[in-house]
Amino acid sequence: MSAQPEARVALDDRPVLVLDFGAQYAQLIARRVRECRVRSELVPHDITPDEVLARNPYGLILSGGPASIYADGAPRLDPRLLSLGIPVLGICYGMQAMADALGGDVARTGGAEFGKTELDIRGGVLLHDVGEVDTCWMSHNDAVVRAPDGFGVTASTPSTPVAAMEDPERGLYAVQFHPEVQHTPRGTDMLKNFLTRACHAPATWTALAVIDEQVELIRAQVGDAGVVCGLSGGVDSAVAALLVHRAVGEQLTCVFVDHGLLRAGEAEQVVETFGDHFQVPLVHVEASERFLGQLAGVTDPETKRMRIGETFIRVFEEESRKLEDARFLVQGTLYSDVIESGSKTAAKIKSHHNVGGLPDDIDFELCEPLRWLFKDEVRRVGEELGLPDEIVWRQPFPGPGLAIRIIGEVTSERLEILRHADAVIREEIRRAGLEREIWQSFAVLPAIKSVGVMGDARTYEYPIILRAVTSEDAMTADWARLPYDLLERISSRVINEVAGVNRVALDISSKPPGTIEWE
Image (cartoon, rainbow, N blue to C red; front, side, top):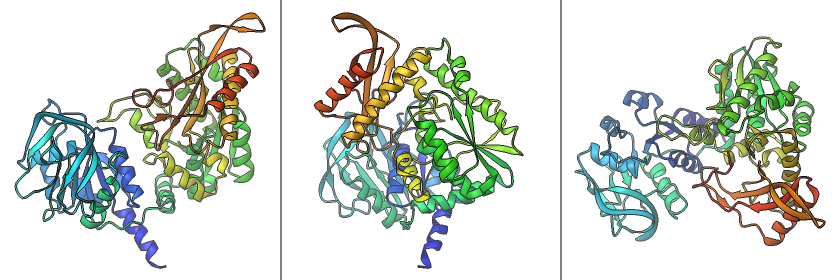
């Protein structure tokens, strides 16, 4: 019993660092490490050896990346990181960068591999107990054609003679494929081998450990200052609020801004949960007309996000002036928000109102306790904190709300149509028992009209697009194969019950190439 607190201390002090070379999978590597109950942190690829040593990590993982190591401006690996006495695992581009730094040969062989590939395994630390033949997920043009001196080749494919290599004496391991994706069936076992057999990292990371750690960090950051938290109605801001409340208590005031862009019934639930159940200090601000005014005539989605983000901040600033020493703003920012808003090495997909959409001149310091967590991890933390299931398991909802599910100008009429249609869809999904199987299901309203026939009369009204996807972390998603009878009920109810709609369409695109939201 007494060993658990010591394990948490070791966990807090010693993460596994994932060096981000710009791959969309970098955050997935970190997530897989945490699924193995080992703490992980994402850091830039150009982190210095001194900065690494200061964090005292159990190990380093070099992520993949979109570039060729020979391309102009391609990110480089500091060779000194490979001689710190810390175990290192290179993945895809990370393997190539390791080989190049140590004198191996990397070349474009003309035999690029993309997708599932058969892997011929010859043993080793990383591939211990995996078997002699397995499948893996490849995604590369360049490949290591000669391993550096001291390395043994531990796996190959028909097109890649050095699919895995390692030098256990120096603690260096590398694979050309992606063990972090589901399409490499034994990939998690390989990562566990690295974490346990090479790094000797204890498997102690839990939701409780996240709570303990964040409470300490919040107290250290905030001190005695006042804190304002923007509640949106979703699980992210709710968990962030409860973490901060546990850390600083009455120093926190939650501000719930009803911007008129929420789903049906959400405003009432936020007030009930936090004002009544948790008794967290709560200010309820009605600002729907103000937000609609800012969105009048706006059709560009990035402009919508920027205006909504700035208006949120201005409302928070106004409310904070009524509070004593409110210097900090709490936000429920997740890592998927950060990565999609762009970083030093990752492309910008879209600005999130609480990341890339923030104005430059805010009067707050930001407190973002969930910034490096994924949605499923946030939900586990929420359960541990005692949030009710209806909030913990609420489907993800974007900060800009229904504004970015209306494709075109946002008006009061379109909001009411969309809100009603969305409520029908969510009710039918819930009745079908699919709410937890589906990552998100919602309505989209494009600002166009089509001809229909109702009661022998011509109609010219809006279509509603049904979007339903399955996912694990929102970084990739597949369209949900909903039963035909469910689709029929949804279509019939929306057309019959929602005034202004005469057509329902189904979005059957995945992410990539699309995104989950339309804007």
